[in-house]
Image (cartoon, rainbow, N blue to C red):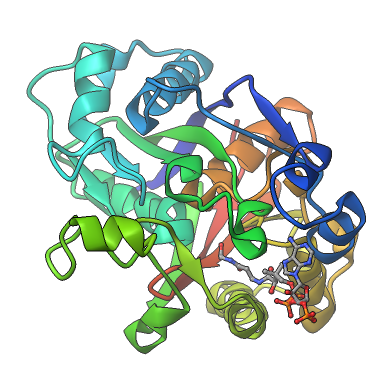
Length: 327
Ligand code: UT7
C-alpha cells in the first residue's frame, strides 16, 4: 500500500474588502488596537446571494485545474464548514451539484477551525480503503453571516473565503499522518447559541442576538497556544522527526499573537510559520487550505518539503497534519 498525496490546491476569496478603518466607523475600535492585538488589517466579505457553496465550488474547480483533472473525476467530496448554506442538504451536496458531479458520496464535517485538518485525515483514510481514486476536501466559510457587527470583540476578527485540495493515492507518501483531538467541555468558549434543536429560531433568539457567534476571547487564547503546540509536537514525535526537519508550518490564522506564541512555545523560528492574517482575518476552516494554496503558488514550498498544518477551534477541536509536498 502506497500513500496519499495532495495533487492540487485552489482557493477563492470574495472581492469586497472591509478594512480596519471601515470597522472604526461601525464600532468603537481603532486600526491601532486591531493591528496590535490581532495582526489583522483587512478581511473579505461575501456579497448578498453568495453562499459557502458558491465559494467552495469555485475553490474546488481551481483545485481540480491545479491537479490537472476534471471535477467529474472526483470520487468523494468532504466539505468542512460551520457556515453551511442550510442545515440540509449538506453544503457538500450543493457543491457537488454546482460542479455537475453525480453518484458519489459527499458529506459535511463540523469541526470548526480544525475542519480542514480533520477532512484531510478522513479523506486519506477513505482513499486508503482502495475503493476511491480521487478525493476532494474543501473548506468554505461565510463567517460574516454569523458575525455581530455591533460586537467589537468579534467583528474585527472574522472574514469569508474558501480553499480546497485534491487528494490521490500514490506510490509516494504525502499526507503522512495526523493528530486530531477535541474537548467538548470547552464548548461554551466559542459557539453559536441559536438556530439548532436546543434554541430554534424565534423572535426571542433574534432579539437576544443569539444567531451570532459568541466567544470568550481571552480564555480561548491560552487554550489555543497550548493545543496547537501539543498538536505539532505529537504529530512530529510520531514520525521521530525534529522541529528542524519541518520546512513550513501552516497555522490557523486566528490571531498573529497566537501564531507567534505557538512558535515561541515550540522553540521554532516565527518565520517558519506562514502568515496571511493581515489580508483575510479568521476564516475558520478555510484559513489553512487558503494559506497552503498561497504558499504553494508563491513557490514557498518545494518538492520534498515537510509541512505541518495546525489549528484549533470551536468544539473545542484541534489537530495537525504532517505532509510531505510531492508536487
Ligand atoms: O478561531 C478560533 C477563535 N477565536 C480565537 O482564537 C480568538 C482568541 N482570542 C483572541 O484572539 C484575543 O483574546 C482577542 C483578539 C479576541 C482579544 O484580545 P485580548 O488581548 O485578549 O483583549 P481582551 O479581550 O482582554 O480585551 C482587552 C480590552 C478590553 O477593554 P478593557 O476591559 O481592558 O477596558 C476590551 O473591551 O480591549 C477591549 N477591546 C477592544 N478595544 C478596541 C476588545 N475588542 C476591542 C476592539 N477594539 N475591537
